[in-house]
Length: 188
Length: 195
Image: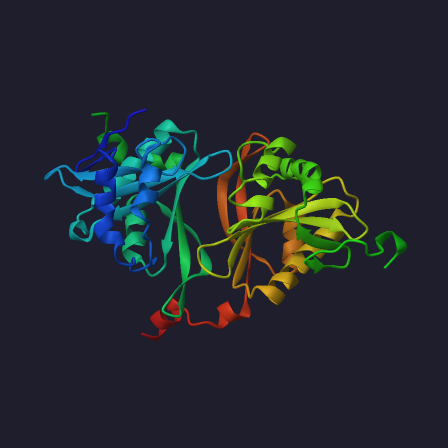
């Protein structure tokens, strides 16, 4: 199972160590997320999560580091895993540092992660969700090849207003038609 | 009420035919069977009495009654565990993600199932001020869908081909009840329409 997936703009790779993973997140998590609110976890808790397998444990909630190809900078993390039950659905979630937004890094990171998931697990689809007001995330999901699937009404409250959770998916046969499959380089 | 259903059981909530209550150790053998029978079971490993007992004795969250996940057994008023309801809190207050199962072989399954759905909803409204309650079911579980629809739950989301059922991918459906509070609360789309 390859752990390095390279596209035209970014590379997914394992985090070098727990320090790199925590440092990548700390600046962002120290303030509440604009949409999801407080996502802070104590360093000890994060260390505990990292230690068993460096955040890459097949089938469990995992994360790749996203690295820019032009500068080699770490720009974010690509979370992924398999949903519970017999594991025929994968999921992704992307986090890109603000200074690297609007350059397509998140879109390509998702597409590389689709390749990782579909090529290594017997899944029928990959699933993702976001809040309806998080239009940047929703646009990224569609541009990466996903389809809008439906919504859970009044799911999340911010400042006294309720927001729907919007859900997206990509079936295996749809992924097979994506151009990323011709571009992706597997392995280091 | 006929004699067969003379009230003997106590619980958190009492319906016409059943009560809902937390799990007691004596319930575990029957509960393990029901959990293994449930087509919508979330865990990939089959439930056995031994495995469930281990979970029941978990030191951090004993009694299948945790901070986020709680199990209720469904008991006939006259006695006997006939089903269970698994309740999971969302990180957001007042939001619940549930599973429900009533033993397949019961002749009066539909009657009990409808009673469970109504009893649970009334219980939550009385004590917990719920905002939204969702049940996660497979599309093939038509009886459960009918019980929930009879209580005001509606299909909200379908995830096609997402669960293996008898060797084939099956759709997972989310049936949801929304509170009046939530339906009448300010919503983001309203703002967008006004601007």
